[in-house]
Image (cartoon, rainbow, N blue to C red; front, side):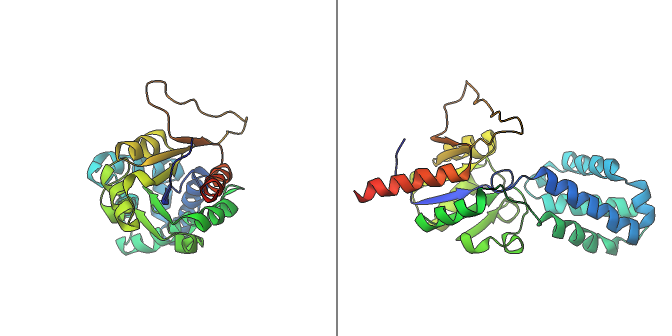
Length: 241
């Protein structure tokens, strides 16, 4: 399929890098920090208990579904209070977690593909997560980063897609949103009037996910960002002919 693309909005977690190992490592580092600085809290909240509390906070505060940072801070304060320790440790504990959360390992194709995409059209990061592209070292590739916490609503809400289009100065139908999540990225973008690209990466066994049969397919589907960059290069070459 060929259509005009004036700009691209990109999901981050599980699109540019895998998120599960990042969060696991960050929570392990947080646990080590607590063992050193808040040992009673660390004893009460080993990794599984810490994760369970984090899910409890999420369920108790649905109005914060767009703000993973605030959810984590609430959980840390509750943990420290339970341990009878100084709640002034909430921020430094979060800082230890967040520094590790921003230490990501990109998919093999991501960095080169991002450079190729950015050479063609403006890129904007559009994420429900709280990764900091400046810390990660990728901000130079993007025109801006718009997070759900900053915007006040998470994907698949149409408003966050529309806000990104407005900042890009592009009509919605000329913006391609790229992401791995069927509901948050592909269907959310379509409902908001954007074009959609599903990054359907193979798992460790080489298998890809099946598209749900009751939904119209995305405009584009690729196994990697590199394949998307190939498509965009080819589209631009055709436009020049």
